[in-house]
Amino acid sequence: MRNTLAIARKELNIYFTTPLPYALFAVSTVFMGFFLIGVIQKFQQLSLAALRMPELIDSSLLNLTDLVVLPCIHQTGLLVALTAPFLSMRLIAEEKRQRTFELLMTAPVRPIELVLGKYLSGVLILTLTLALAFLAPAMLERFAISVDGQSGIEWNTVRVAFLGLFLWASAAMAIGLFVSALTDSQAVAAIISLLALILLWSVGWMGQSAEGVVQTVLIHLSAPNHLMGFVQGLVRLEDLVYFLSFVALGLFLSHRAIEGQRWT
Image 1 (cartoon, helix red, strand yellow):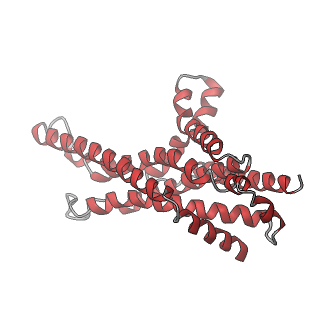
Image 2 (cartoon, rainbow, N blue to C red):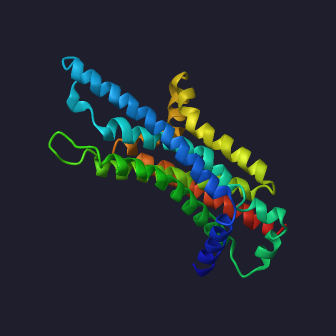
Image 3 (cartoon, one colour):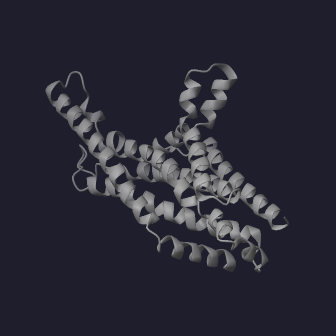
């Protein structure tokens, strides 16, 4: 555990001495800001329509949690697919490019400690990026009041939604780490990871046009479908197994890849 934490600390120091995390923080803030403005404007239009035509739109169904906060959290899942490859691309590939991978292999550090240390640092940076999305409900709570005078934000639902987002980020980082362990090129690692994560994000759309078993498999592999359960405030076993399976598989394959290269 000591070696794992030491590697994670070293990686975090490297991260914060480069412009990459700060650039990702800025891009993520702009991305989430634009989407937040869009859903707020749509919510405002629905609220005005409910005032003008109360017989057509039930105003009790209009709440910031379901119509503003949760769509933003779900859309942030796409941001994870776009940013995780650029955070994970350097974890192992850079060590190979700088010829320091051999030194790590001769150091008193086990491959599993190396994998976990690299992984933890990447997950922490990605979690800090996702924490920016938590600012949206925090700011909206100052202006949101429900019909009964309580807070207009359903925090239990929001917390479950962020749990799902964290699990998706953890799975994405595990996939990126494995790809980074296979190559010494950061660009190649980023591109392959990005394609894999975009495929997981969009495979559900392909399943809509398929039929039978193929449709079932494609929809089951879709990350947004499993993230949606958390966004709805539901912690389902199948969704937990989906994300944790990718985490376990990514870490296992990363360990095997590094262990195999250790003896070559």
